[in-house]
Length: 191
Image 1: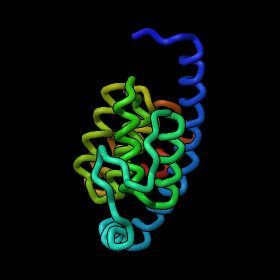
Image 2: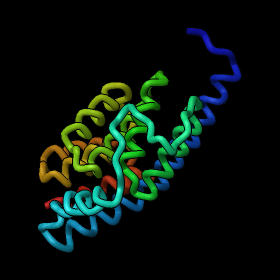
Image 3: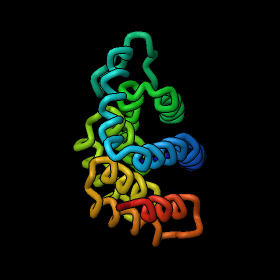
């Protein structure tokens, strides 16, 4: 499958925009969730309780389908933008649906797996989240953000050793970056 120069330029612009958008959106969630863990040891169960409350307000669409009020999209940039908007407004079921659609466009990226994994975790589907995160790591083991997310999800699930291993990997990749500093901070806060 050969694409022209314009396609690859648009794909590069999309990747940069997408990566920056995801970083901006997820940074707040990481910081807030770590603060919650230290406030109350039972807060590891809070995402599930929040999920139950949200599900009563949101009509989740099954993955791989589009809600009737949402136009069909064929542009990965638009799908990504909408997915990020749904994620930011905590409409995780809709965001997961769109991130799944992005995977169908190929070539898949670790960033898309990262976003889908985090979204599935917030939906209370953490086993699927871990599967998607590990698939993303297999695609790009040098992606620092996905290691950070894997550490975060494992920490939320109470698997401290797996969290420590993933966060150490993220911190060791580039300790001076924002992701590296976040990983170090999370490591320091592990029991």
